[in-house]
Length: 126
Image (cartoon, rainbow, N blue to C red; front, side, top):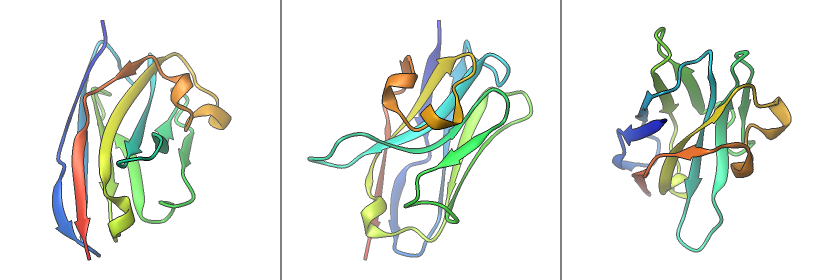
């Protein structure tokens, strides 16, 4: 069974940085593609960044050049380094995992993932 636990959220001023972590059990970088999603109040959940089992990466246009997705060497922890944060980045951030390879074209689609964490809140003030 796959379990995902996010941490690292918090409140930060615009221009600041945060690093989110997702501890994954039941998934390694060889067995699961993983991604970060976010959902702001009144909005749909959207893909932020994804990493497939073959190390392909994909980022939403809104975060390109500011966010970096990575995994530790053991493949048990997924990270999202968020730099130059903006108020519009404020949301509940979720970690997600899907067994096997997810194609690059689907890495930011919620329907591509089977497992979800409970989320960690990120608030960016102006």
